[in-house]
Every structure is written in C-alpha cells, then in structure tokens.
Amino acid sequence: MKSRDVRPNCVPKRRSAAAKIPWVSPSQSSSSWALHGRAQASTLRVREAFVKERYGDAGHARLLEHASERLRQVLTVADPSDGWVSFDHFIELCVLIDRLFGRGDHGLILQMGRYSAEHTSGVWKSMFQRGMDVTQFLEIASGLWHRHYDSGRVLGKSSRENEAELTIEEMPLPHRAHCLSVKGWLEGVFSFSENTRVEILELSCRASGNPGCRMRLTWR
Image 1 (cartoon, one colour):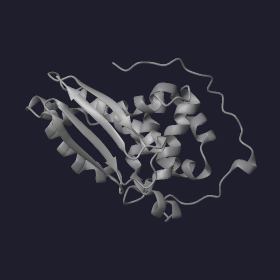
Image 2 (cartoon, rainbow, N blue to C red):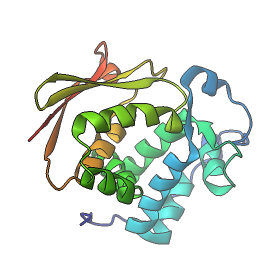
Image 3 (tube, rainbow, N blue to C red):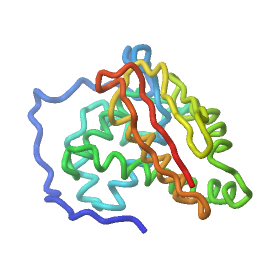
C-alpha cells in the first residue's frame, strides 16, 4: 500500500520572465546530452504520473508552472521517436518534485523510485515466484541499464553469502537524485519477493565527493 503525504498548497506561483529558458525541442540535439547522457522519456513519465496520482491536476499544473521551459516542453509534447531525452531533464524533474511536494530532503525521490517499480511489478513478481534469487536479479538489472540510460553502467558482485555490492560507474553527471532513484527502484522491486527480505545500505556516492557510487545489499 502506498503511503500518502499531506498535500501542500497547490496554488501555482508565477515565475518571472527572466527565469525562463529559451525553448528547445526535446527531439533536437542538446549539448548537455554529449556531456551528461540521456534517459528514456518513460523515466520522466512515471514520475509525472506519480505527481498526478498523489497531488491531482492542481499539483501537475504547479509542476509545469515551476519547471524550466525545456522541461515543460518535454512534459507537454509527444515523446521523441527514439524515446531519449536529456539526462538533465530527469534530474531536474526529480529535484523539482521533491522541492515542491516534499521537504527538499530527497525523501520523495526515493518514493518515486519505488513507485516506478510498481509499473513493472507483474514481471518481477512472476520472476521471483519462479525462483529468481537476488544474485540473478542483479545480473538481469545490469543488462537492463541501457534501456533506461545511454551512459554509465551498473555492476553487481556477490561479496559473501547473502550479501552483494552494487556499483554505478561512468555516469557523466553523478547526482544524488539518480542514486536515490536507483535505490528506491531496487527497494520497490525487492518488495515483490515474498520469500526474501533485502536491505540496501548506501556506502558512497560520487555526488557527495566519494570515488564511486556503491550500495551493499544483504538479504535473508
């Protein structure tokens, strides 16, 4: 069952004209793509759905009001034919939702990661029911990475029995919002396993000045 947050005031605030960013079609190339990579538009759409479900039409209107011009265009026009949008848009959307509707402490970013797992819950529940264990899941997740992001990679390695370490490598733009999105998604997926309880501990994050983004998974 999803937890419900107390709804904040959803009256849109006007932005000054000076704060607007010149329009750029989401289907056009952007210099940030070369620098920071790309994400599939579906990763943004599921977070947009999170806002609509929890905060209604007024909340969605508030989100669009506060989004940059470029992000607003991504959210209000059809997705590019290949599905790719700038990774910067993904980060902006996560941070903006957390600031507008949460406490600005990244708590909602974790919740959105868990929410995104629910959209593929049937697939993962079926695989866990057929006996997939955590190590096998990590192998599958590593192979799925580039369906969602066109840069970086995720590696899972068992360190001992019932324990593994997951590392996110080579992301051009490390950001807390991304690491927490991945952590939340993992927590969401593992919640579908009826027989295994998995705990995830963040060990380090490049965005916090550490050499790598690492998480330890332990299960029983």
